[in-house]
Length: 253
Image (tube, rainbow, N blue to C red):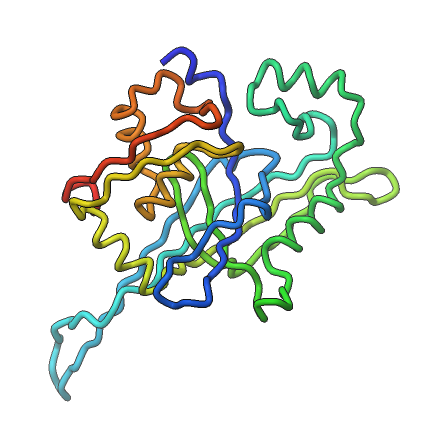
């Protein structure tokens, strides 16, 4: 649709908070988030299956017996650019043309690579005293919803000021999927016939995020948009009532 092409969605990290009751699914803390400056130009999603082999002495081969599947890993690079070539994020930066103009006339502070690295580090892997561990994360970007923990972040600096201050860096990030038993059961039961819900749109809500809250995954948001006959589903109005229907058995997998 024409109006849906104007908004640029940015990869967003949200915090997942585990309730005290183990039977309750993790909740999204939307007050703690990080939005990337530039979307990654590639992603690598890895799935690893483990097998055991019991090979007798003198045997030339053995059958592979399935053991288990490792949690998936997701890897991508993030560009942090303080040269001014990439406009710093603004409230209007989701709309390319308007955002570019707003960045030029806003007169805001220059984008600092060192400050952005500190912000990213604090969000991703610094120890949080209240939970006695780094944060659990939810990565959202389009149809991607990936509950995970960070496993590594490596910075490569590629451009500097004359005094040695970094002007550009690439953060190579790696994440491991993390799903509780409660989350797994909720996703497996996503086709329950009583899973029709009405939800009111609140400020900051997006259709993928609301779909994640209901179904535990974001890739059903296009079906939700169709059911609600949304012309511009990327711009939701606050206080709007949306219907989230049951999903078919094919859609839950």
